[in-house]
Every structure is written in C-alpha cells, then in structure tokens.
Image 1 (tube, one colour):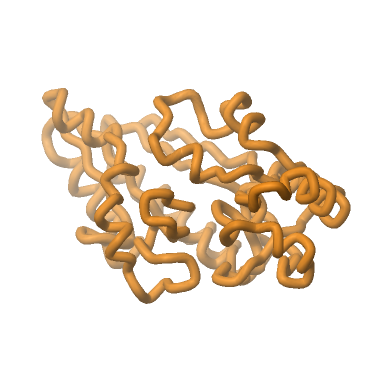
Image 2 (cartoon, rainbow, N blue to C red):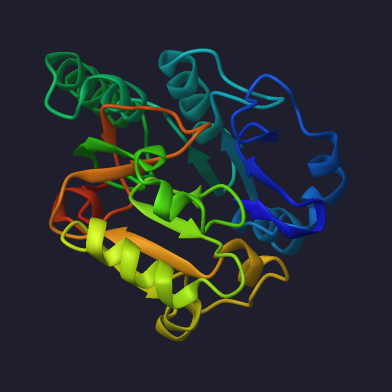
Length: 260
C-alpha cells in the first residue's frame, strides 16, 4: 500500500518497503498508527464483561504450529465465561501461492485441518466454531510491466495493492494516454476503474474513510475480470497463485458453522 506521508509503498504485514522485505521501514513505523483501527477484540475487551483474543502465526505473541493454535483455542474455551477467539491460519494460503490451488499438497493440508478441527469440536461444549477463508485463489499467468515501456514511463511511482487489483499513480498530463495504452494492452484481461469510480462504488466498504485512503488507491485500479492474468513490477513476489480478481474462484469462499 502506498503511504503518502512517507512517500513509500509498504508491505503492511512486514512493515517493509516494497522490494525490501528484510529491512523494516522506520519511517513507516512512525506513521503506522494512522492505519490502526479498533478491532472487535478491542471492543469486546474494553466495553463488555467478556474476553477476546487473537491468534496469529506471526507477531509478538505468535503460535508456533497449527496444533498449538488448536490447543490454545481448546484451553481458552474450557475457561469459565463467554469469550471471542479469532484464530488465523496461514495454510493452505501459503502453499497455494507457491504451488497452485489444485496441488496435492494443498489437498493434504485441507484434509489435515478438516480432521483436526473436527476433533477440536468434539472436545468443546457450548461453543460455536466458524471456519471461513478471507479469499479464494486463482492460478495465474504473469504480465511483466517492464515489457511495456510506454506504460511504465507514465507511472509516477511503483504499482501497489494487489497484482490482480493494481493501483496506478499517473504522471500529470498523461491520464488519457494511460487509459488508451492500458486498455490497448490489457483491456481484455483487466477492467480499469478511476479513483472516483472506486470511491463512488464503495469497493472498499462503507466505513469511516481513513485519512490515507485516497492517496493509497492512486489514480486508477485495474481489476482482473474473466482472466488468469496478473501484472508484475519490480519488487513484487512472483507466485503461482494469486487473488483479488473478480473471478468466482477468488470471491467465493467456504463458510462452515458448527454449533456445539
């Protein structure tokens, strides 16, 4: 995401500048609080008599394995009182990115998780377990933007957001030329939306607008529709499978609810 106050494009999970994933951006750490919003966990802990926790495989209080995550969930659920637990597992997403969504390793990971979550549910009482994905996956073919110098020379900065939902910031005076060049080269793979169209459509939701939002989305966002293409620029990870496009594989997700 492009962060205007520091004029850097940041990989938010890592606090690093795009293409420099081993070096934390100190400048970003100074403005990161502008992005932090109150979560449902904050609301529950601060405004109710109940408790809430988050579990992640990264960060300060990370769990070290899927089994440990399930152990923590079971332990917390067996304590007295109502509670909310949000637990994030980075599989099979991680393996899908590397090997594609149809790889046998992915199927094995899903089967393992299915069996272990079933066992967890058997060990719980008076609980509701919700299993849901944050997105789907699509095996992709890569388009390298450096192969299109007529497009590259019109960019004010590097691309951001996603490789199948790409933000472009265009140099002054090149807007109409960019639309023509982009649609001529990529129009059969991507739909190009202007900043005003993105804002008016509420593509990013109906909540209170963050002060960094409008600069972050750039002048245009191109979203992959009915194609498996993604656009790569320097600093992007080259992965076999991606998401954020408009295909059914990406926007439909499983939802499993177990009332125990």
